[in-house]
Amino acid sequence: QVQLVESGGGLVQAGGSLRLSCAASGIIFSINVMGWYRQAPGKQRELVAGINRGGSATYADSVKGRFTISRDNAMITVWLEMKSLKPEDTAVYYCHADTYGANYWGQGTQVTVSS
Image (cartoon, rainbow, N blue to C red; front, side, top):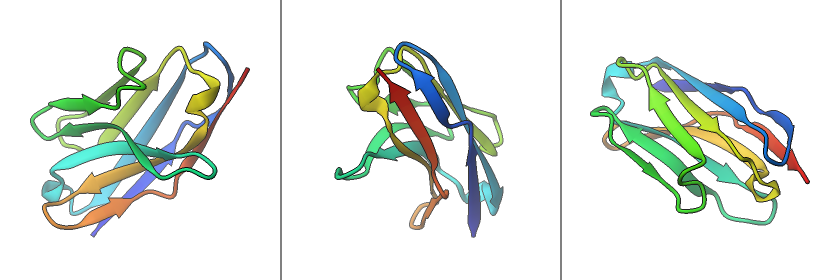
């Protein structure tokens, strides 16, 4: 089992920045990939960014150049640095962990970008 706890969401004006954190606990060694998803009202949950144990990262086209995902070496904490935020970035952001067959989700943190 893996538990994920997010923090760092909030309200910010367009053009501003936020940093999300996700702390993992439990069977940490089994985590292969960690990432961030988001879900806006009335929309499907979508991948924002992911990073694997080797450090390779992937981003949604909509956030490339604005968001940066990083992790500590033990894959205990993952961060999402968000810059130049836009109103369309408003959503609940969820931390996700993949363990070669099982998926785990955090409770989500709200990010609201005002215009």
